[in-house]
Length: 549
Image (cartoon, rainbow, N blue to C red; front, side, top):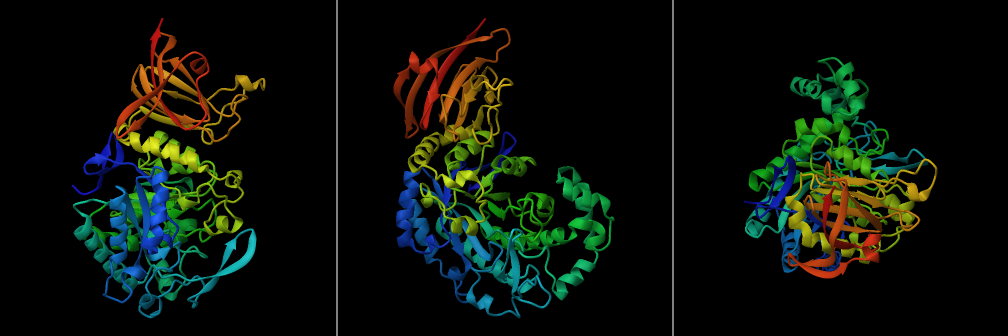
């Protein structure tokens, strides 16, 4: 079968060549993959970091420079490069939207404003100023294609279908390309909805009855804000009457999701690879301060109704509230697929955490070739990062990320088989801080603990013996008396979870590495090294123990 998503142990899992596959990936900077020659060095970096896939733009303007004339030489060259390195690709269709703008639409689309209308955030204006930030009194010129443009949607869908046809013809047998993202950070900036005459008329018209009924029937999964708006509105009427204070945003989400679904549907009819939609997070801001209409969590019910051809919604995470975002995007039972994340000092710990805690389908630092380099203020602003996060001041260590990447890539079959089970867990210093002791004694702090059927593993982060605040630990239980541990900057304490057998002793603690799926033992740890068991640098341990009365 071609790459697809199916549920394993109740969790959506990506299957490639009919085996569970985890995308230990990285996303390139937007322009890097426009040059296969430039990409040679980027692929080399990815290999050093232990990645098994890259997320690469597939720009509409380069694929269809003239209407109806397609050029697939660029994606073909990128696929060939991936095959040479035994790596996979997730293509990112940069069509009508890229960061809520239309930068990658072909020139023939951009220049024909009659056939391909622009969104109006000010009445009658095809380009208008949008507020950059509530704290920055500056407006930036903004324009994008209208989500109501029928001809635009048809042209985008036609091009995307042609692209998927190329992938089917060139790659179906090899399965180098395992998924496709449809558009990039869709939605509208500068306003909660479009305000053209057409948009105003649709907004004043009755909400489609089937959609209104669906929303009222699915309030149990909604965020509090949207649930309150739906329950307080009328069962039928205009958008304002049915959805009250959330009407503008739900109107935008309805039309953006339908647009994206039409594009995805055209592609899936040709070659039904898994398809995703990513979002620029709302960060608690007002609609329009982020791309309104994109698949942020509070409009997932809208997207569920309007975009059945999208398989997974993906958060681009550049905010300090990493754990909260992961929890929010998985609470409805969906897979965690992170196509973009910052490359600060939590980058590698987040890789470990997302795989072990959320059994992520994908974790992908954006601009991963910047790992090891500090962010400038300009980069932080352009990438939408919260530059107040202190961790951004400390770049991720390149060698550390590479060490984790290689360990996890070798262990991927073992990890993937445990997805959706309690056997695979993880904690990190960022997401699971210690609980201070009531008396303030740092040695009495309560560490985060992972509980398995036969044992517990407590993990000490940022203690008097371990000052680092960027530790992480993953544990894969083989049985009630055996496990694998992957981690760094942490101390480990095993205790019994077996009733009637409160004591636990270690029998074997073995360092080593996996190579082509085989375990190559290193040192057998004992004595001082197990009396206070810890991992200073990224490593994997094979541990056996027993419990007794």
